[in-house]
Length: 222
Length: 318
Image 1 (cartoon, helix red, strand yellow):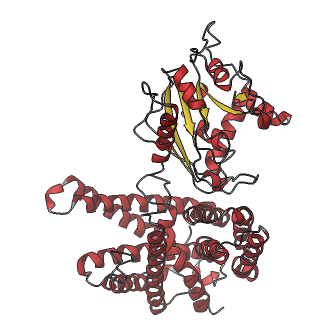
Image 2: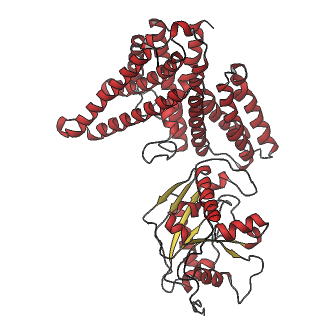
Image 3: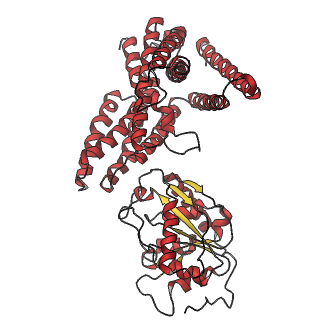
């Protein structure tokens, strides 16, 4: 049995006030990423909204979270926080500053997962009743460009907070812009597709739900 | 803009644009004339495209040759982007592509701007090709090696090398005293673009009116031999009539140039259609939804530009 997520006392629900430098860096990086990745954004049977959501996408490149974040309208962007790996984003002062101050990312410790401090609980506590999340249920970047199996975190998110809309996102061609292991980008054209929301059905088994969520991402590929 | 011929050319083009815009708007307001509404819509979209093209060109011409070369450089960059996006490359090509986009393409246009024909005529076809081959080999992935590198080279040649011969016309030393200063070079470039656009258009019209025999049904379902012949003849006639705008050309030479430009434009369209068919797409890129990509717009001019450039050199007697 899963205990419902502990939401009391209500956490901070106002978007954190960031310094102008952080805002400017965020805007600049978002613009640069969109320009460099030639991203076209499509909303398929779906609309941007500031309601609480979890955007889940296939993971192909370091640019993924930044580009999804950049593809959202400004108002939605301000209440959307990417979920990222702590081991990578705490390496060095620049990465740390970017993750914490500019993107207000929720950093997850991949190497040391504790029973009392599960990543899902941490995400939900940080999200509170305001923020939307960007997650990559595959856990790490795919090497081949194929979409791998989803890890169970998405299921527990959906189970603990059935009121949050789960939005599938498909990222196309970004693995060619900045593949795994490369640090110089090639400016090809990519495409970000947002799909219609889905929820955990009543009595839906974990594996069925994860397979359905994965299919929802793949179906946006056309 | 101190030459009567430049003023005449601008006035003529403006008049023509206003005329076709009026016709397009008339057809749109009177849908009961028995003309297919979709065709009218396409026609009006085309006209809007011409207005945009002419405004951008006018702005670039007004800003000078550096601005024009830069404009063509950006168009090349974008077209190459669309080309490589559609072309399956592998991870082993990543670093080659990085240098292709950020070193070879910009440097080529710098050389064009400096009018170093002796270097830029071999820079991409020889040096960039050798680099791409070697860099992809060093990256250690031999799968479909020749196919991958050939595709990158084809993209570079068509999107960058060939297109750059259009702005290179601005640096051609033509007899400026008789032709009227730097205006003459800009007129030459505009002459080329006008002929290519006109040829495309006339090919479509002749195909619609007389089209019977498809050139290659599997590649393109609307390019016919009748369209090619009619388009080429019409373009040759237009070029002969407009010979005064293109400085070194005599009327008969202009007619030959028009013919060749039309045939090359046709070749470019067919080539890009073949690539698109192979990749199973209708058009390149999604810059503006429903408008195709940059490469769809410039395929004809890419093929026509180098030939027109060298014909001009021949006619000048260089």
